[in-house]
Image (cartoon, rainbow, N blue to C red; front, side, top):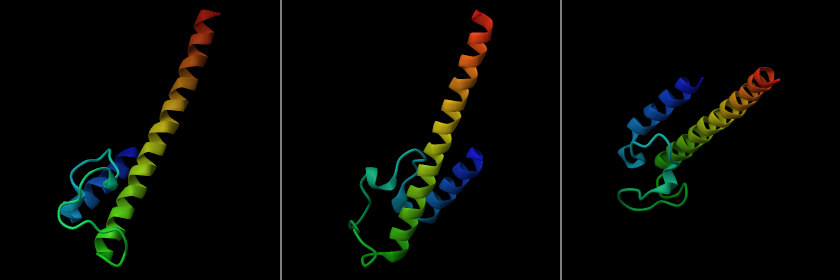
Length: 84
């Protein structure tokens, strides 16, 4: 599932060079080349693409959080079994 989301982020990054190549950062974390656009009125296609990328990055971080919590729970159960 994580690979699928990462592939979507890479695909969206290739659609517009203004999004950058970063997989881990939301698009508003760094400067956009050219004029800044704050609403749908400036550049509808780019704004919608940027919002789509931000949603994908949020999903990616959510997956990482769930994986981390699951792994820590599993690891603590294993340690409890071995230390008792």
